[in-house]
Amino acid sequence: MPELKFLMEYVINIGGLIAVATVVGLSMVVATKMQAIKKLQSDIADLKKSLDEMDEQAKLVVRTDIELNKTQEELDKKIGGLYALQRFSRVISTALEEEQIFRRMDSNHLEDLGFEKACALLYSEGQKTFSLKLTFGFEAEQIHGVKSFIDGHLNFFLDLIRREKTLSSISASIDTPAKDRLTHVFGVHSFIISPILPKEGDKGLLFVGTQNPDAFITEGEEEVITILANQLGQALENARLFEKTWRQHQDLEKKVEERTRELTAALEEVKKISQRKTDFISSVSHELRTPLTSIKGYASILLAGKLGQLPKDVYERLDKINRHSDELAHMVNDLLDISRIEAGRMTMKFEEQNLNHIVAAATDLLSVQAKEKQIELSTGLPAGANAVFADKSQIERVFINIIANAVKFTPPKGKIKIISHKTDNMVQVDITDTGCGIPQEAQELIFEEFYRVDNPINQEVKGTGLGLALVRHIIEAHKGKIWVKSKVGQGSTFSFTLPIERAAL
Image 1: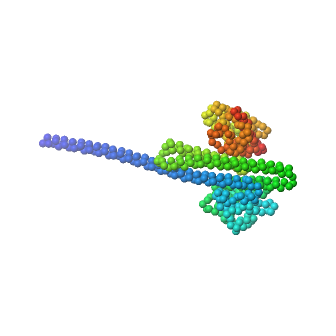
Image 2: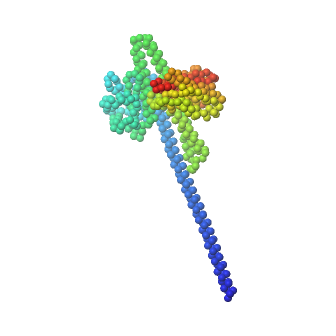
Image 3: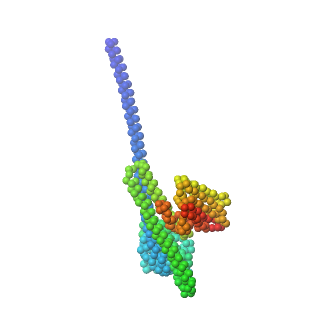
């Protein structure tokens, strides 16, 4: 019996140990399972985060594609407008009679600009009324209604001429009732009215409009119509000058000869301008299409790639898209800025400026390019000749354009120096380089639009010939002068003057 009791106790103890071991084992299994569950939960969270990131990347790609398509459409529209404007300029620039100018403005040219209706009006100071010189897209009854409306609102239309401002259906200066009246009377959905401003004689207005409710007027179209109205004013001025010269033929032969020479010179200048515009259209057409091709090509590559974090080569392609777009925007902006300055529509903020600060900003921007060519870039602006009255941002553009040209045409280890001194009520700035120099016959032409000196550097480096033309317009807007002294192989000195006080403007 004692042995049986001992055996039973032994069995019980063994059973307890087995139970304890089982509980421990089960606990370990449960702990392992819990760790596995936590890991799975972490993996699920990471996967969800990755999916969210991929979703954001997909949205970014779609937005980018939409923006690129919109940009391409706008640029295509601008190209079409520039082509139509060039054709307009060619047909009206050689017209020598006022009526002939308007006869040459046929419907095809206006439709190329995207408008189904147009009319041109000139105001006679003697008769105190507007006369319709051109109507396109209007029915006879509509023309009568338009003329009656204009006669009944003379002050409104004369005010547009006096203010020399373009008005459109998207202008902030037009209230809704006035916009509704104009669209109703002219029978259009959107419109642009731009003043025709020859220096002498009757002035007038150019109206264009579209009946398409889906075609909205853009700022670019406003610019094109404003340029067209300016060209009409110039054409009218040339035609009137010719007519005046012809009339004087009966009074005095000598005066006729003098006027004829003046007119011939004016016509030659018009032809040169027309040719430069033709060359510009050709150049810009090529320069615009190249960035657009890059945009489309690299956008397609991006869309065809896998979603997720963009690899290095995709970033490089996106960078190329941005750079090409910037180049295109820069060219178009330069051209529009020149047009605005010529038309007196460029708003400049004249304030007292320190040339040291402006020059420091320009040289800092171009210092990397200068260091790459080991060019010594130095300044010497004395305290008595560094205060000017100017628009800071525009004068910075002047320095950047001239210094950038100096860096481009100066060989490695050359020198560029910027100095200034007072002369009367102006400050004269001289920017001297040790570059390749400019031929004597080209020194007056380099400040004209689209002109480029024929040298090996210009043959290798693309450009539009707008930089120095823009510089000249900016300096002249400050009532200053700009000129260059240079010898081939001995470098160049670009000099310009800026006012010290507001009274000099």
